[in-house]
Image (cartoon, rainbow, N blue to C red; front, side):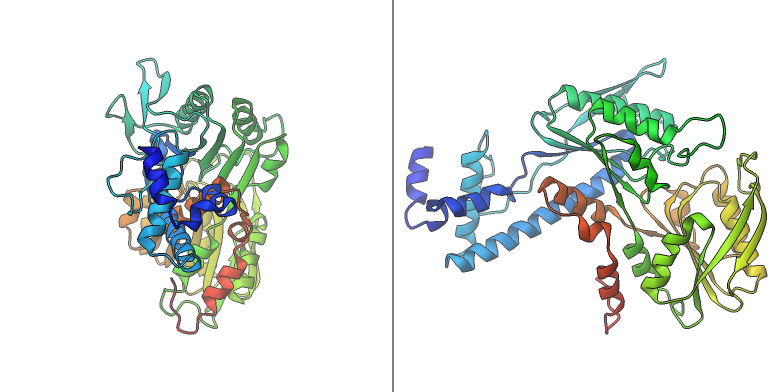
Length: 441
């Protein structure tokens, strides 16, 4: 059957005759990336499903571009090009596709089915229900997802960061034991990232977590606005791809009425966030101010009413201005609430905060509800890098979707392409802000 079909399709088909053209088609398999697999840990299931949706759309767009280019180059109908591309796939794949129509695009199956079991004593077991041998595997986990997740075929469990981390460990090991060629972790929140430096007799836990993952066989971690970039310096071979949500945040900011005006100022909430807020100030062409905070590190905050700030000083002017602050992480929120109240006391108008990782630990949401009622802030823009439910219903909260960014990163890594324009998105932001019609795609 294969010989007959090969002979029939080879008549007047320059696409399959020339070796160079065949190599161009098979270098990246747009019709079905067989060697790409996404594994979702229980905490990262929702995030992974959204990433997979964008991955499939990305594969379809790339396929359509290839079809369009080849159709023009070889003077063929699009359906004929699709049929020949599908033939190349069937000829090179271990098993031919079961899709009934060879002239149609075939949506790739990317997600690897899994089963997670939590035993009565708290032990966790991860099982792969599909083959990963020889595949480029991306394991997705949201270690800050504190909503019930599925275990044991549907039982709901609420996990801590440590539970999520152990789930990740056992899945990495399962994928490695099953013959995965390369393992990359997709961790919007890097676990223990705030324990990255020593102030006394304490551990460097952020580094140690990465070294455990490196020992298990992880080659790369894709994360979002890691708390300290120096964490990546502690590994021998493991690489960290640190993505930023600045494009998505600025896009959302630009849609808010009467915000990006002449009375707009960017404020860094502390010295550690200066570079991040300087980026926003430069991109938006707005002035930059700074809040300097004295802290008592002997205090550990457990809710938004407590914080270790002993004094705040402002370098700059915010009187009568719309204030924008960006930070990487919001935990209990006490520090941010105190900064917002301080800015309002200094005469600030609207106060808007952008947060990459909105943890909202403890009773943080209720404290922000009260602060919003008192007029301390106007909006909080945050990503969906941490799964939330309750906060999405708040008037003061705006969520931006960063799963397309992660999908693009995964697709480029899988195809061995550069990540330069994703890691440094200044040109994209400039292009967006210079849109004369004010329209944002």
